Image (cartoon, rainbow, N blue to C red; front, side, top):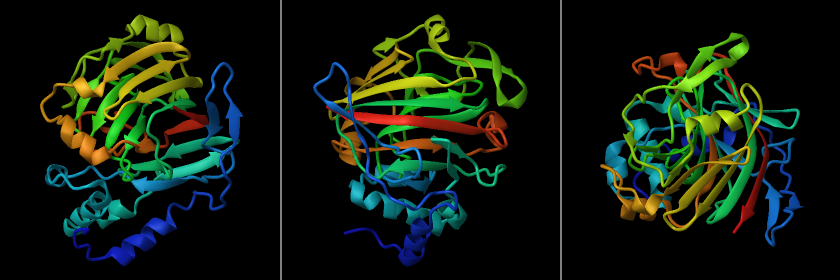
Length: 317
């Protein structure tokens, strides 16, 4: 039985309302052939609407809720209840900015100076798969692609698109499942006009994430050779296994591979993670919140910055 939830009707109405920018029409996914593969690839974004996706607030999951080891179907209600009880209903209602422009999803804050975060979460769940997409983030933004995620969006494995100072692109982060980071490199860059970046270079890590060594990590030089600065970049993400092996490629170059069943890090409990996430999970795109108490401050997401997503396709394995 789900835990008590005092204002369930209000929250259900809030979830149904979504964000004003979100399209309401529904169109089914389109099937595509994938040359050289016996599997079929299909689109998860029709280029015109948000059919198959829904916006969610980015609600960091309180530690006591995580440690309660609730089954997945009870977690959402417990998290919402915690935020209600702590008088943070505004965060529950927040959905961010999600728009479709010229066949592209544009994500950001709404209003542009908001401090809250949000996700766009797939309605479907996926077990073993290869996901392909293109993204073009402004500088600086802190975003990523959630795989095997809970319906909240904010619990699962995140493929990093931290296009910001002290960020990593293509590594893997344990979102609300231990706070580990498997980062082949940490980078920074110089801000240019129109939210562009120049002089990408390696730098020291910062923050409280627990570093773990990936099973494979590209060098920063290899990343620079493949990354198209201030342009569109193609991601391929392979996710296989109950506690999955996650492999990432950027523009055809392998960047990271991590066997999440073998991670040894303080706070990461593979048995608990397997129970909380199950054998299949949602996909999600992130708009990170901003905290003026965090040293990154607006380096995490500049006022008015956006990230763009397009050509989102999946092959179930």
